Each structure stands twice: as C-alpha cells, then as structure tokens.
Length: 75
Image (tube, rainbow, N blue to C red; front, side):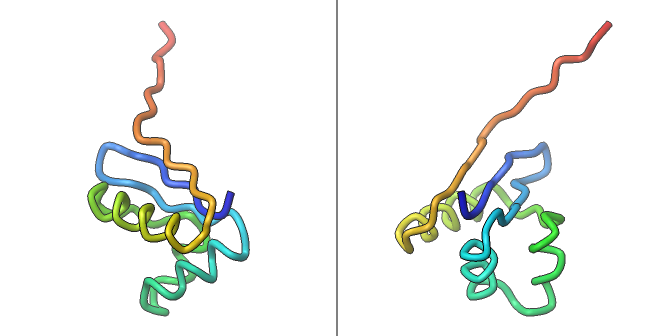
C-alpha cells in the first residue's frame, strides 16, 4: 500500500504508508500541509478523497480506501 484512506464521520483521513505515497501526496498538496499529511493527521471531504483515490490509482499507486468502519460499543 502507498496510501490508506479511512472514512470518518467528518470526512476521510489520509495516511501515507510508503515513500511513494508521501511523494505523490506532496505533488497534490501545498508544502504547508506536508508534515501533517505525512503524520496521518489530515481529514478531507470524502468526495475529494474519492477523486484523490481515482487520481492516485491512475498514477499507479496502491490505495486502501476503507469507506465505512464502525466500532461496536461493549456493554
């Protein structure tokens, strides 16, 4: 995997998982955001994440897009 995308309640979290993923993301975001992106601390709107995913796949990257994840509460 080069980039993992995790759907959250308020958008989609971007987590680069390889050097290729980080380098590719650097070409799509301003340098002010590179550190937070490389640390997996960025959430973007899900629609934007879907476009980013499509673009990354076209660019030859391996993407893991978890579109829905639920946590079961223990009683």
